[in-house]
Amino acid sequence: MIPFDPQIVAFCCNWCSYAGADLAGVSRLQYPATARIIRIMCTGRLEPQFILRAFELGADGVLIAGCHLGECHYITGNERAKVKVAMTKELLDVLGLDSRRLRLEWISASEGIKFAKTMDDFTKQLVKLGPSPLRGGTK
Amino acid sequence: MTKIKEIIEDTKAFDCVECGKCTSLCPVAKLNPNFAPRLIVVKAQEGMEAEIKSDKDIWSCITCEVCNDMCPYEVDFSGFIQRMRVEATHSGNMPTCSLAGAVHAMERLTGTGQKQNRLVWLTDDLKVKEKGDVYYFTGCVYQLGVLFQDKAPELKQVPASVVRILNAAGIEPVVSNQEVCCGHDLLWSGDEDSYTELMEKNIKTIKETGAKTVVFSCAEGFRTFDIDYQDFYGDLGFEVKHISEYLLDLMDEGKLELGGSDSKVTYHDSCRLGRHMEVYDPPRDLIKATGTELIEMLSIKDKAICCGVNAFVNCGEVSKRMQVERLLEAKGTGTDTMLTFCPKCLIHYNCILAAEKKPEEIKDLKIKIKDASNFIAEHLKGRSQG
Image 1 (tube, rainbow over the protein chains, first blue to last red):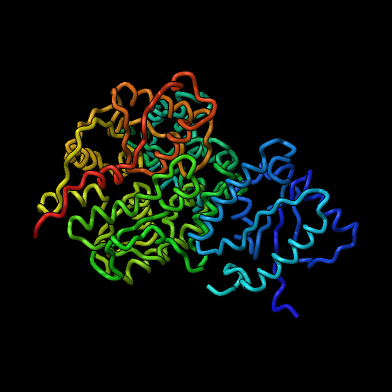
Image 2 (cartoon, one colour; image 1 turned 90 degrees about the horizontal axis):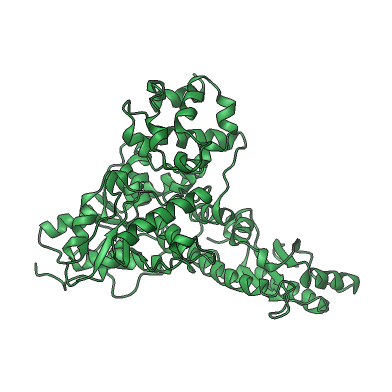
């Protein structure tokens, strides 16, 4: 039995990762039901605030999933996301929220298996890290 | 007494005689004809509470305090705006925050109780203490440097620079990992609850270190402690000082020596340090002490043009116009560097300078905005004896 049920907020891009999540679903792949998926048109739409707000509201982890580099529907949106996520990770470390709670993955529409595996991995990692300090985890 | 009546009484808004001096001098009213500080006060006097609360105008104000300074009846207009904003957020009139509110969220997240790593900038060559007389309040300048690393990465060096200067004067300041953001931006964006929480944490942290003097390198933190904390909390039990005043005292005592610069710079008065706290000369004296030639812009001290944004609220066309105006003034001095003590001013000016589509007037402008603490740390003259 897992010691606690992590809560993940997953931002998936419309063109790749959201479809990847769909594929994982229709392929009936099993993965932990820990994520609340939010569809965004492109990971380039991502603001650091979305991540900070998720943590503020008690998320244990945030997953950002988009098209592979070079395959963005809007050409360079995912490259912007890469920069923003790297910056937010640094900020999370300074704030004392482990940057391992934020993960960036490139998952294409055909990679249902990768989506399921990522969820599995991330959930296991979060279980190891414990609940977020903002909802009573170790401070 | 209703809340709005209380605000009017406290800020002396009843004394307004509608002379319109505030509106004629207001930098926002000059660019946005729909905005008038006088009108807001008159509406309050007439009891049009609901209208003020729902009006977006209270977010257009940049709280630069030109109006406060010029008002013949000493109406505290910025204080009025500050408190009306709290009321406005209660009735759902929210500001439009830059970066979707990431700065505010970051500031709130400093106070949520987890063990922070806010002293990551502290290297082995810097000497600090856990308890002592002098406390250096770093504020969130390092975090802002992370958040705005594409625009103002030099902010990350500010805390280390300040400690280096203090060390050179033989002072080992206290810095604390328990410190949280001062809450300035939260208070000015109407989030009084989070602000109060942060304030209590900070005062407790500083009192535990037994500090008698708290030194600030950030203009906003300085204002928040000296004015707002004392309003909300009462006597703090320690002295607050801006780094420029503190360093000048040290130089008078012969503990600190600066020099070795032959460059030309200009200095930008931020509204928090200038009009709010009336610290005009110490930063100038300090910059001159490095041997630098200080060339003044057209509007300085209490007439200085503001950077156009307060508390990361409502950045827009008006803000950009004001930034361009100020940068053109800086260009007029013929220098290539503009110094300021306010991290926010630094971010806002760098923001327009880094923009992909710049306004025509500043297209070829090559001016560097620099933090004054970093500048002074570069011009230290070895450690003096005694």
